[in-house]
Length: 428
Image (tube, rainbow, N blue to C red; front, side, top):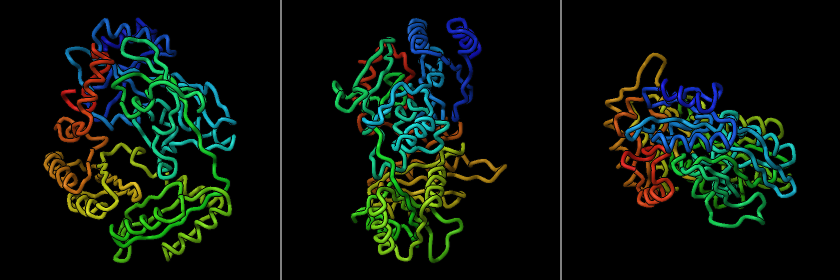
């Protein structure tokens, strides 16, 4: 790593080199910090000639969403976009914003709010998330329930390909979006196809008033039923999520939160509707609601460096999946967050201070749990694993759908394997 860092330092200068700790990997990676797209192009050409594998990263907040990269007969270099920070263009009248990939999501959120817009995805820990990193990881916010996933809002991208050429797709205005839909292809690619250097997002209108309605559910079945009642109603909450109570009671295992927003008369109608559907329910309005909604957004496992399970299923199978997760993790202290309308469950492993995760037991547990969830029509991923878990080969599932397509794309777009392989599965 030291020798590789010295070579990069000689290429880009002393300020353009650091190191990156990657949870699940024993040794840190040398980190290149180019200050411009031109410097990135120089670095990619050099890496291609020197057979150095490049791993594009942003601020590094979602590295645990894919397998740590390994070399294919050479060195591995992390390439960060964090020094590329600037809002390139903001058209309030058009409702779009364009920024360099290293721009923090918090910066974009504040700029959008100033002009009456809502930045989606509304991600947690936005101070530590970059625009390029969010798109590359395919990270949607809790506002996905109303606004849809992140890929629906990426209007255009500029990206560096493996041969250091600059590709552009889409546009900065909705009416100018043309060409192949590369933004959706690059969204969720985890740096396996390109380095995103600039992107344009479509913005939503910020709500004039906000409210939060809360209720409880005695078990997974009631939780799913209450979420289903809201989804089938005329209400359009910004987000709908639940957290397992700690400790649970006989009367309630989960607390539900519905974040409402929009014109005053619409929010009033939705409050009345949810009072009826969720009786008994509590309502928070005004500044109290805004603060509660923001606080709930930040209760996210990205904020803490602990392993967690991410399960997805169908709304009909949600109670069964919750039961399977409860049984499987009964021997561990956990914290559970649920997005019932989207049928996703996150279970964080919360070992007490000073205690270590029983890796052997966990390695035995995960495949069985994955098979059980698959039988229920769901899937399971382990995020942010410890090194022992990552080394076991258990946490990272193969690409069950589209693996052959991803290989074909990689072979076509990156025939020399400039971008490090293995972030999805070992033999990619």
